[in-house]
Image 1 (cartoon, rainbow, N blue to C red):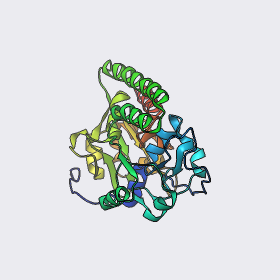
Image 2 (image 1 turned 120 degrees about the vertical axis):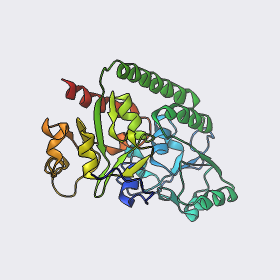
Image 3 (image 1 turned 180 degrees about the vertical axis):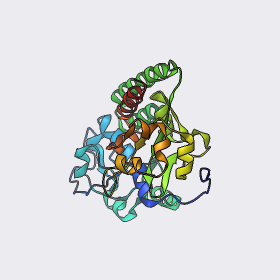
Image 4 (image 1 turned 90 degrees about the vertical axis):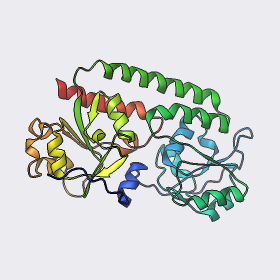
Length: 296
């Protein structure tokens, strides 16, 4: 039997797009707003989909004058000028927009970050690895953009929601084992330190990937079968046919509880489940409902 792969391989490009995620990239239009659109508050370029969502959620959407091609939510963001791909901004585009503030979570080349600063733009990086990091990120954005009151209010709602989910999860006598498949060729899932593992814990389940001290990693079919998940959640759009049908037809997978009991799920909105942002409670709620259904 093959064990989970622990190679430090480069994550497939499509997988990275999903993690940024869910990242069905949108096309960009022209942004013709003034440089300081709302009462002199700073103009912002967002270099990550999660940041774009948070900016709009706290009321700073009118200040966003640049985004990445992966920033597809909310729908209003489609009217904002695209400055490059996720993690790969065009310095030429940034220079032409001359924003007061550039926000990012991770750049493909850190040299680009230094050049942004050299061009006279204020660059800020947010670190959001778990749902617990989201409230602090919202408050930070609120302070930087002049929307502290709304940001604090939303952060409090998320903190209280996470606390409720945590209390509910702690009452579960035996958490259901969950296998969350991020990609199917090759098979990828999240380990103990991943964002999705935290979502599963909040929803009252146990991530089978927690046995691996990694964020995301490649696995073998045999490893999944041996782990015997009670729920399989497919977080991708299958190119041919439905993901649940393809999973159920895999040789040997009929021996897992999830396949035997028909507990395979697909058709998820990846931007909710794989993207750390203001809709985190919605994602946890959906997973919780699936897990509760498996117990009934």
